[in-house]
Image (cartoon, rainbow, N blue to C red; front, side, top):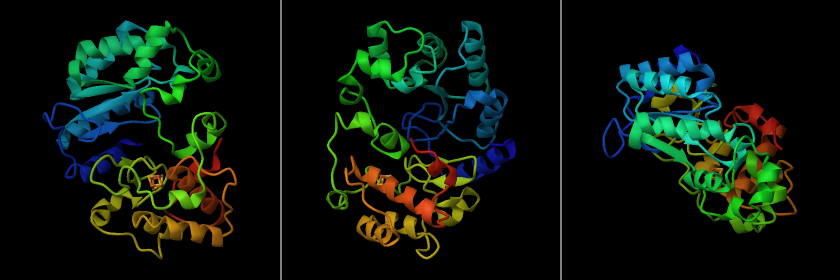
Amino acid sequence: MTEQQLDSLFRYISKYTVPAPYGPEDISLNHGIHLSGGDPFLNYELLLKAVDLAKEYEIPSVFVETNCFWCLDDQTTRERFLELKAAGMHGVMISVNPFYLEFVPFERTERAIRIAHEIFGNNLAVYQTEYYRRFIELGISGTVKYKDYLKIEPEQVFMCNVEFFLTGRPICALSGILDNYYPRYEAEVLLEQPCRPDFVRPWHNHFDNYSNYMPSYCAELSYGNWNDLDHFVGTEPDPDEKPVLSMIIQNDFKTLLEFSRNEGCIDDPAGYFSKCHLCVDIRKYLSENGDYKELSPLEYYKHFG
Ligand code: SF4
């Protein structure tokens, strides 16, 4: 995002953000805002500016997510966390999972957690702590290729006490592995399931650098440009203008499936792991075979594993 985009976005969303239950200087995954990426530390100056702007617009409960790639030494890590805190950042969330472990040496993650805890105290979140605990227990250092991690913990990756969303591109990229752990279902079996959590909700929505306002965790399904946020809040999209979005908001996946079949989409004969798997499969097909402005950014659909 540019600084100007951040300024506009924070101005729009400031009136909708509410503080964490314990107070505006505490953090919570579903209150206030969190700055994510990519990794916001790729542009540290902009991250600092974002904290300034959040303060200017009195946005509560602000934290940043990072995968710790930048935590090369104690001094830099401490300096940056201290500088961010002084600027008004309330907390930090550190990502720990086997996917980042492929690229970020675990020493950097450990360093970030140790120093962030000194500086942010209870406003340090580790996502996911179960992986952190396991990596420590396994004595992991450096990076570990995902295929090698699967050899160390073959049964644990998906079945242990961690969250793993069966949605988006990962479910397609990892389908060969997931087949060892999860059953698949025919499309019809999944249609009546509700979106979990609700697709439209007043908490945890996403705003990207292409100006998309994306409800929920549903990657690349855009309500529209967040410059029109006030217009979107409390209104339903025009079904002629955004048919896919409209059917999803109605939770009318039966019609969406029929619609996609009429457009030539063929069900995966192997079936689907989840309703989200079916949903992304339909959206991918429609994005490649039509013009749906709600399937944005389009680039997302061009890079499936
Ligand atoms: S089914 Fe689609 S809209 Fe519903 S939660 Fe899953 S990805 Fe989102």
